[in-house]
Length: 254
Image (cartoon, rainbow, N blue to C red; front, side, top):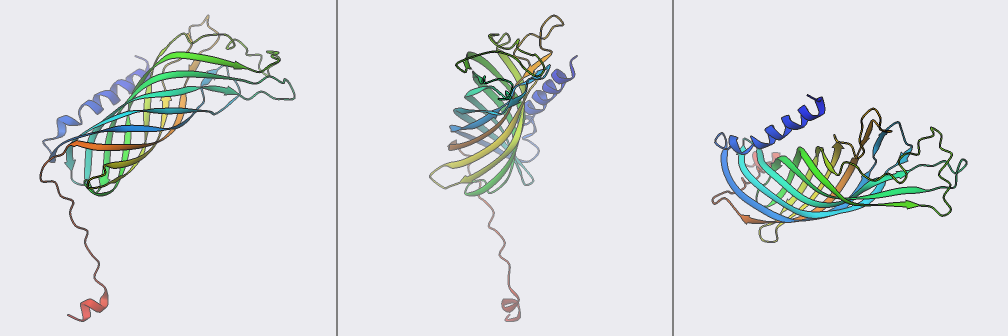
């Protein structure tokens, strides 16, 4: 089996086992839903190499989180998102060789599924979290942007087969992982900031020996803000009060 596929399957199995561990720690049954939006920087990796810079694009969608357990200090949850994302790449063409400019928008519907571990105050206050899990997506449209005039050559490594070549593998899969920062309030909901990296394990073009590219996979840095609201809360959960440090003067006065 391909090592990348084996790693993805392992991550999916590990993600799926998080709710099964709920009997070990303190049970939770929290359901949180909300919206998210932000910005991404994508750079598609090619073999043979195409010189590129990161291309920016918008992303937004909905978030659903199910919290199942508090294990010691770690709060365990599964978080799924359904997002629109404008991926693609922008080529770094030497202006001394050519006046051409080129970039491509590739529009995806993406669904990351994160195993989420967080630490902090559950109900009101700050939470720090780690996110990791598989991500799938589907490219439903694309647009090529050429400069006018367009020459098309020369290129340092003479790779020009990407021009006019449509996405051949629209289904995408890979791994995402990163950090989450969250502030919870008693009545106004939860405000979230997330940053993570998506590493594509699939290619956008066919990659057989007769095809021009052996690899053509997306890789993106994603920064998003979100607003979440607790639809279902486990009853009886109270954040433990913080221990106050007693200064020396108060201790001597006793």
